[in-house]
Image 1 (cartoon, helix red, strand yellow):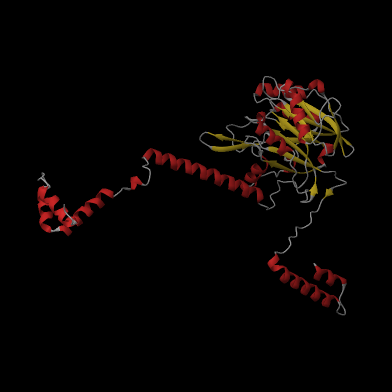
Image 2 (cartoon, one colour):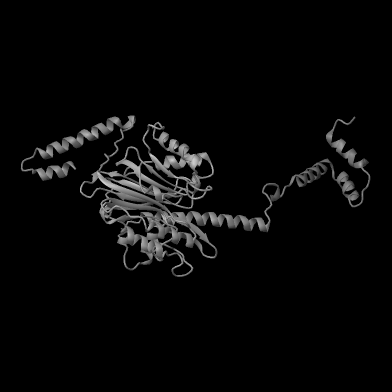
Length: 431
């Protein structure tokens, strides 16, 4: 037995048979001594352990790399477009395309129209819709909500009526007041509804013009701050022949002349090619003569169009599209486009109540945004000024804050106690 490692290695090399191309290395290694043999073996071990980049990183083909680059570009482009749209929303330069009568602390009666496209594919989507419609903004809750494309059929009306009422904590049944009104769909197509805030200013709400109700039209009547108000929900067919017949039929309906009238919905057409569409293929392709005649017959106007400038600057027009368009869609060879399909019309009596409008993003992924109209009684506006939020100082700074506050109060006391100080100066110092 060999007790020495070097002797064992030397003997192994001496006994190894000659191999083609490697015999001389073996003999030379044996004659070079044990240390050289060990170094040669270690070098060969290092060569075996050497790894390539492919062992640490996945191999990406040219096709896969191009696909990844394209996907990243699209994601970054969508993100940048959203940033640009948000920046356009918050620009505060006077462009003259928004109503300026709405004070930041005003409490308004919110009128919302929203195409819900079947309330989504899941019950969770439906619940998210109902929760979002009950949400309170800085100007108050939504007083009345018009829905289009509910896809709610006749047998489901009771179920959805109960869902809306229970969301507000109300019981439902034959003896309970109605808080939502539904005109059912046919074959899971169309369907409209009107939801009323049970705590809002819209009181004594009842159906009206029921003989004209369909999956595309309905109306209710109630009182807003003691004044009669008629709210009409319109969902126009998207096919041109059916849409024109629909508007012509509505023109035979006579509206009350002594009531406030608000007409909202998805009209599936636009009347101002430049302001209401960001892209069009040909002039007048999206217009509706029957709708124009209907508006004249009913005596209602578009409050947004009433304050538009006669000519647009490019920045004005882009911002107006961002602030008022509700329907967004892609166009092959062009990119993203938008239209103002969802909107409100008001009669002469209600026009003085309109103090603002806005576009509201949907709670569930949908191709339509909501169009919201803010109403306020002209002779009795309600404003709620929110007190500034005051946070207590952290414990480690309590003594320092107390000393600083007492010092400021002492300085103020010394100033107001001086001779010849007037009340106006005192108020300025205190402010």
